[in-house]
Amino acid sequence: MLLAGVALLAPPDSDAVIVSHSVLELRPAEPGGFHPSADELFESAASVFGPGTLAVVLSGIGQGGAEGARAVVAAGGRVFSQDRASSAVFGMPGEVARRGLASVVAAPEGLAKAICDVVGPSELKHEGSGRL
Figure (tube, rainbow, N blue to C red):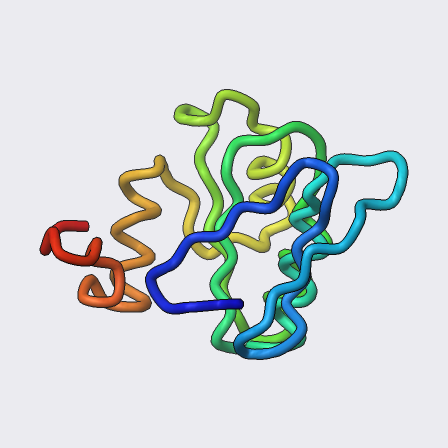
């Protein structure tokens, strides 16, 4: 279930797919490739949330996330990508940036600020702490 202020992580043998505004399903990963799949997640988010989608691509191997980022942009959503200097591996964020799909390319601190600029810092406060 998708809830405001709750982060969900998919296990390595599954793909996370958003099926409605409140439901996220974990599906068994297809053999081969990297899992969980950023493409599956981003494509499903774009189909459900359309222009309200914000995808963030962080350090990772390969080109995963680029096709999903394309779907997000096509739906009117936004894509942010980690920069080369702060990435342990610039494969995923680099491919998204190379394809011109990222409207923001920055270190994690800059990405956090950009996210706050989009959704507002009050949406990101940790419950009870008053801090981001």
